[in-house]
Structures are given as structure tokens and as C-alpha cells.
Length: 190
Length: 203
Image (cartoon, rainbow over all chains, first blue to last red; front, side, top):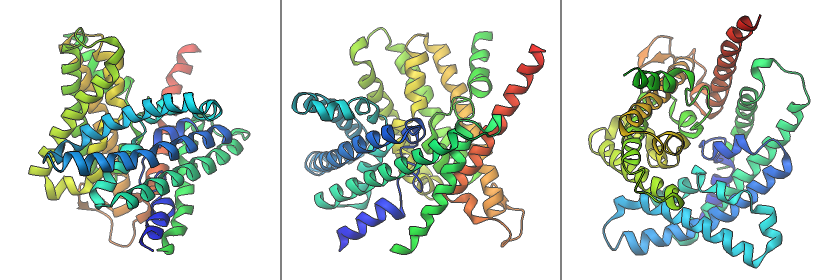
């Protein structure tokens, strides 16, 4: 039950992009087309779910016993950067099809603040291993949902005539704001 | 000296990280719920940016080219930890609680890594320091403007000073959607202002 609450809360109610403002850079940058947005979303789900487990283990079995919890930030970002590099190599070797689908997005993910954000949130909330992984999966699935829907909205906008000054980022921001209002509807779920 | 002031002006106005380059959106949107939070976040980023620019510029001939990005991230993360602990010790109730998660996330702020890669790794320490100061102040300025507008519309106050009566403001402006909408409109205004003089000079 607890896990279900974490799942719904991270995916819909506290949606990572639309209510916590994490991962805005890829959200605005890679959302011009639905298929690339979906690719990015899948890559993010993949990396965040795995990195939640890894950062949890690094924190619990390395930083806490050594009493250097304050180094969490340095440790997490280096683990994430190394993990992304490693995943890229492993996927390339094991599954060339998956690599050709996700490959372009993987290096970009290191600087996606959602990855570090999930790691820090898991730590602050004191989640155990399973809760951390579920939270990571739910948060990134929320990101994937958000970016795919947003790409659909932007595809529609692209065909319309809008004010010159509003083209590009400004109109994208305002549509994201309207989407965020729509996501308020999930607030009653919990 | 003129090179240094040019570096400052470039960071604050011509290449403002938020309004012109549209970088560092996560903290911009998340921490601009009130003017004072915007200043706090902006100054934290400024400190990290100046320190990391200075150190990276000093080490620019020592760090091997191939591993420069992990090295930069390590340096930035170290300074962010310093700022994090400093705020936790001295500004716990006022700023640390409000900024919360977004202080450790300064590490992945693209402005900092962007300046390290684009400027500090190629220039002398003093101009790198001023470049960091300029960009940091530009970021602070943008966050403060955004924070003041959202605070006025959403809570009816500026810097905590109540201006509008309690029940008039639209609370949505200090919640998530308001951030997107206000920033979108501000960006449109800036694009419009920037495109106007260029047309006149062409004519």
C-alpha cells in the first residue's frame, strides 16, 4: 500500500516536471517531436530506476558507515556520471537495437537534474531499497508521461500562426504552465 | 580593466543566462516563488560559479582534456557542498528550508558547467572570476525579477511587504503553473524588446 502511494504520488501528484521543476532542460529541449520525446522518456526511466538503487547502496553501505554523509552530493553525481557511461557501453554490447533507440539520449542524462534529484529525495525521505527503486521508477515514468504529452501539444502548436515574440520557448513555457494546471487535477488522488 | 567590466555586462545583460540563453531553468522556476528566495538562490549560484570558474581557470593547463568534464563536475560539487553546509549552518530557517532540494542540485545547473567549459577553461583566472560574477549576477537579477513578479501576483507582497489585501492575489502564481506562465511571458517580452532595435538599424 505504501509502495502504491509512493508510485501515484511521484508519478502524478508531484509530477517531476510539472510540479517539482526537475529535468526542465530536456523537457524543453527534446520535446519538439513525440517519438524523440518518448525515446528520451524511456532512457530516463531506465537510468533513474537503476541509479536509485545504486545511489541508495552507496549512501547506506559506504557513506553512512564512514560517517561522511555530507559528501553525498559529490558521491552521487560521480556515481551517476560513471553509471551512465557504463550503461551506454553495456547496452551497446548487449543490445544494439536498444542502443540505437536510446543511444543518443544517454549522454545527455548525466546533466538531467531529475537523476540527482531522485537520489537526493530518496535520501531525504529515508526510503529503503525497494521504496527508492519504486520512487525512482515512478518519478521517471512521470517525466516520460509529461514529456510525451508535452511533445504532442508542441506538435500541434508548431503548425499554427502565433505572435513572433512568442515563438519557441515562450509559447512552450505557457503551454507547460497550462499542462501543470491540468495536473493539479490529480491532487485529490491521495 | 575594460575587459573585466565587459565580462560583467555580458553576463548580466547581453548574454543573460536566463532571459537570453534560457539555461538553468529548473532552479529558476522552482525557487522564484518569492523575491527573497530568488536572491538567495542567485547568490548561492554566484558564489559557486565564481569559485569554480577561478579554480578551473587556475587548473586549466593541469586537467587532461579527456577527463575534463568529470573533473569540472567534481570541483563544482565540492563548492556546492560548501555552500550547502554554510546555508544549513547560518540560514537554516530563512533560506535553507525554502530552497531545500535545489541547493544540492546546483551541481547540475547547466550555467555553471557551461561557463566552465566555454570560458574558464580558456581564459586567465581574473577574467574567469569576473565572468563568473557577471553571469551569477545576471542569474540573480533574473530570479529576483521573476520572484518579485510572482510574489506580487501570487501573495500580494514584495520582499515580504504586504501590498495587496489578503484575498485578492491569485495563489496559482506562486505554485508550479504560475512559474511557467510568468517566465513564458517575460521571455516573450525580452525577445520582443531585443528584436525591435535591430529592425530600426536595418531600416
